[in-house]
Image 1 (cartoon, rainbow, N blue to C red):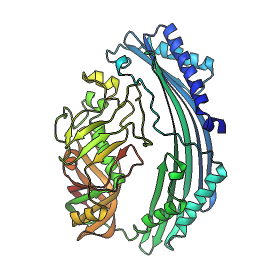
Image 2 (image 1 turned 90 degrees about the vertical axis):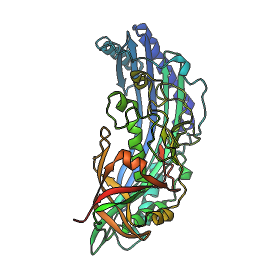
Image 3 (image 1 turned 180 degrees about the horizontal axis):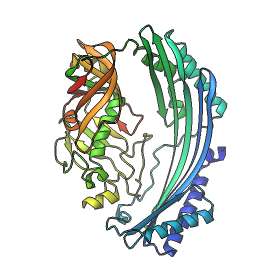
Length: 449
């Protein structure tokens, strides 16, 4: 296993050879065009609960996906068995499927002129060959720190530590060959606290490209304990229209709904509340959204997208105005537009414009609700209607007053997005959407009758 970590170029070379084999066989089988994605990964996870081993898992995965195009018909097939004869069968299956599918004028590879032409090292590969014993020891240290942090911690749902190293190759019949490699390390802890009012549960976590950048085990354990204990004594809040502050974990989802509504698949299906919205105001003038796919060490960085198209820094929203959609090659063709290099989604989308710390946001709010968690599936991207269960904290006089639960928050996504009145400096960079807390001027909050 250490050879995979120490010499990823050898694994990439083998994947490139398989990719070339796929393209050659597809061409011989009559395909006009073809593309192939091949990946290989090594993942390990260890988890403990109440000090005892709960999970020990090591997974060595490899896989290939082939898509062929013939007379505007396409066929795809995949397999996790990379023996040459099985790969050949996979290509043949894709060719057979293409012979029985309906022609689609939007199918096919992106234009050759859009292919990424120069590899870029984005510093995503930081391998450490951690043994299971190392992961177990760290998980125990996290859980122990959490359980010992406060006498009100009564139980644990466990702590886990995981690592993953992955390499991949994408190639197509334009002659494009791209490869990428990346590592990720994560840890989490879930605790339960109890007092005379009942029990509460919460967690803390971290995820980084470099193992040495992970939070110290004691910090994650203590963070889980602090977050859990502060929820004790939770009660319902008054019903009415009040300001609502989304913490970064929840604010990320709000921006994600905006991204989903301006993504190609929603648009060409006419299933979005933001149809034909380019040029319209979707956020306040002081907010911009900028995608930085080539951010060094970024959570979702890449120098080419899932179609092989070169990525580049680009604003999605500038001064509150929507500048473009989020398009793959296929969705762009369906809409009569050009790809935005977003096959596979957005990469390191940053919310710009925030200038207040958390205490300042509370002061700006005055009285209202801080939402730290949302539940349920009550988001309709077709109509924009939003209604979800929530938990968090009630705020009075600019200060946290008490923990809150059994709440429903409701509004319309367009109003919510345009009703953002302040953004925080507490930006979370651990995911592909990077935002601080977002203060919404007003939402309907249902709590006490």
